Amino acid sequence: MPRKDIALKPKQQTKLQLQKPKLYKVILNNDDYTPREFVTIVLKAVFRMSADTSHRVMMTAHKFGKAVVVVCTKDIAETKSTEANDLAKEADFPLLFTTEPEE
Image (cartoon, rainbow, N blue to C red; front, top):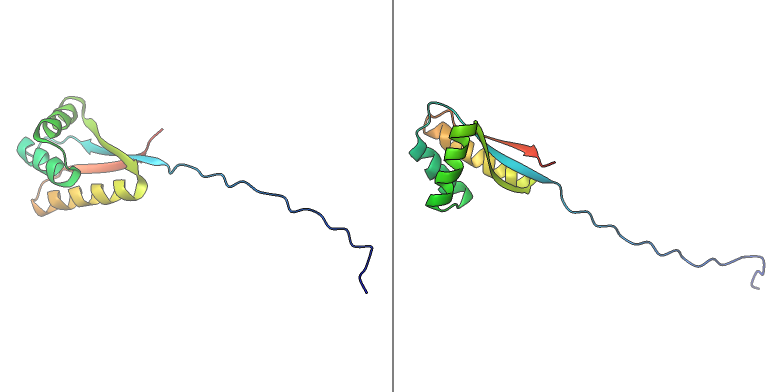
């Protein structure tokens, strides 16, 4: 026997809010010991830059102390930064790439 005192309520529909992933900058830090040619080789190999673009980024870091290499998601930024730093360590250069959140 069905109960008559039960009130049925319609389900509320929820909308999913998708958020864009937070972006991170990979930054090339200038030093006075790493040869410019090596820096451009790393930029071409790891970040797939053309010769002209890698030279421009390297010169920006040389003049201003830092240069933003690429802006991407956190995982990719950390992977690329680590790969570039590992290449520099293997060649015994103090070249340093860092990551930081984009504002």
